[in-house]
Image (cartoon, rainbow, N blue to C red; front, side, top):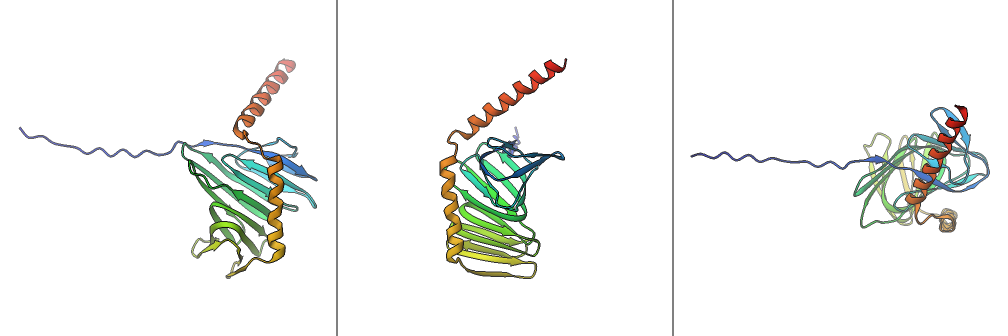
Length: 226
């Protein structure tokens, strides 16, 4: 009797769900645009996918994401949180920096993998775990690494350069120019120390509480209308 054996290949894809960020510090005036509606940002404002943040002159804010990702958004900045996704063993973030400055610290994680990309007009930074600065305008992008390493790609993803601690790159539409950090750029990373004072240890629990409170408030508003 002949027996036929079949090999069944099962491919398991990670199940993703949308995650959220939280504003833990704000200075000056900054605004959030969601679904075409614009409102001023306050401490404990929740940040969702597709949200756009803009800051005014001499303004800044801190956004904390899950799994040890901290972002300081500087003055005169416009940035979109294009992707905020989490899976069982992985987080994926993508930010689009239209203009201005962001300082980012990503803790190296053993339990979960973090994929973090920031796209500027002339370059894309792809990060796993590091402290880095990104400044952008229409014609050039500065990317500087204080700790760790990251990969920089041109906007068409044809050229790739690895930046390590103490290095920076200026990316234009025509070329990459790599060099060492200057003292004033190193000083900027000291701003990340402010984050430890405002950092939320139980971020996801706090976000769940805030979402629950918002639902209760919305339900109460509906009852009052009826």
